[in-house]
Amino acid sequence: MDLTCDASNNEDSNDLEEEWGEEEESDDEYESIQRPAFLVEGEPDFESGPPEDGLEYLRRVRWEASHIPKVKVAKIDNSKLKKEQSVYMPKIPDIEKCPPHLAPSKQWEDEFIADFSGLRLALSCLDDTVDTTLCDPQSIIFGPSEHKSHSSNSWSFLDTPKGGPTLSTILAMEPAARVAMLKRHISLFENASTLLKDDCAWLYALCAAVDTPLDADTCASLRCLLRRCAKLRAEKSELDDEVVMLNVLATICGKFFRQSEK
Image (tube, rainbow, N blue to C red):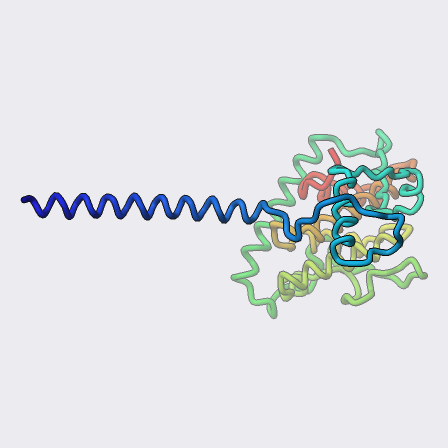
């Protein structure tokens, strides 16, 4: 008699019984899930007033549930929504067109951007090699300061040293301080009616020293500067020193930092 064969057959039969038992139990669980709780029969009697017992209450609940549509569509009056809708984004003015006779040429823009890139490279090298206490105090852009007292339109003396920027002042600033100072100057320039020489020098120097890549807030500030320069330039009829300075700043913002809308 082969006892090994009998033991194997017994194990197989036990496995089949366990599998069948699991399937039967699984089917019972599924049916119990699908079976409604508190099953009631009959139609509700709404004319008898409030439900007198729990079964009548359940009949009414079942009846109401059966009459609820599976999909409910709400009718929305869009006209009322538009009246009550707050402005999500402020309306930003477009960059005004430059009069053709005041616009810089393509050749000038290319040469200027090349020179400006060289200046930025030189400043980045000086950041690590030059002792700021030995820097020439003269302005790095426009020479000695010619800052004069102004009316309420003057703003460059606020929170900054008087006069134009010096090399020692720029190199002594931390990268975050340069960005903050640039945003400050741009914010104040938005309320100015003219662009002064020292004001342009500060904006130029800070743009030359600010680290890249720029964050979103700094890019937004540069776009504000570009729009303001374009607006002041559009009001001009003749080429003068202010137009040249406006072209310089507009080229830096629009071409070098690529903040133009094109």
